[in-house]
Structures are given as structure tokens and as C-alpha cells.
Image 1 (cartoon, rainbow, N blue to C red):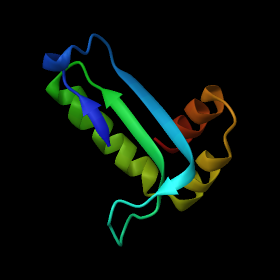
Image 2 (cartoon, one colour; image 1 turned 120 degrees about the vertical axis):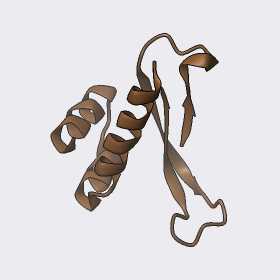
Image 3 (tube, rainbow, N blue to C red; image 1 turned 90 degrees about the vertical axis):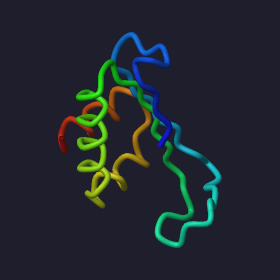
Image 4 (cartoon, rainbow, N blue to C red; image 1 turned 60 degrees about the horizontal axis):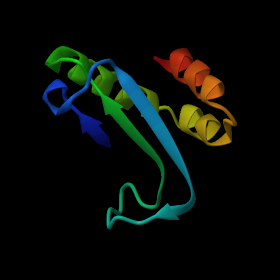
Amino acid sequence: MAHARPEDGVKQMCMSLVKLASPVEFGSKANDPVDLIFAFGAVDKNAHIQVLKELATFLQHKKATTALRQCKSAGEVGKLIKKYI
């Protein structure tokens, strides 16, 4: 999970998602193959920890990650995430 802190130049909370057409293996039996990559930036330490916690909560739901793979737009992704967080 790529992320940046305020000292790295983050001006406002942000998040992006890359859905890979061809999954990548990183050598992790528990997580390979990877087809969803999240990146985020947080404005302070508390927000950094909070977004990690919320994203982890979201990713624990098998139905949510399955539905995420079916999303066709950023709006659909946003609605789905809000449903589970």
C-alpha cells in the first residue's frame, strides 16, 4: 500500500486505486496475486492512522473486495467504500 505523509508534501487527504488487468505476484503466499493497489496521502499522523484503519476494515469484507473489482467508475468505488466504512 503506497502512501505519503504531510512531510512528503501532502496538502489534503487523498486516495487512489489501481485495478490491474494482469495481477502481479510479490512473493506473498497470503496476498498473491495482487490486482488491487491503493495509494493514499494523509495530512497528519492521526489521519494517516485513521485511513489505514478504515481501509483495512473495508478490505476484510470479501463481498466488498469482490464488488470493488466490478466497479466501472470512481463514483461507484466511493459509494462502495462508504457502504463498508
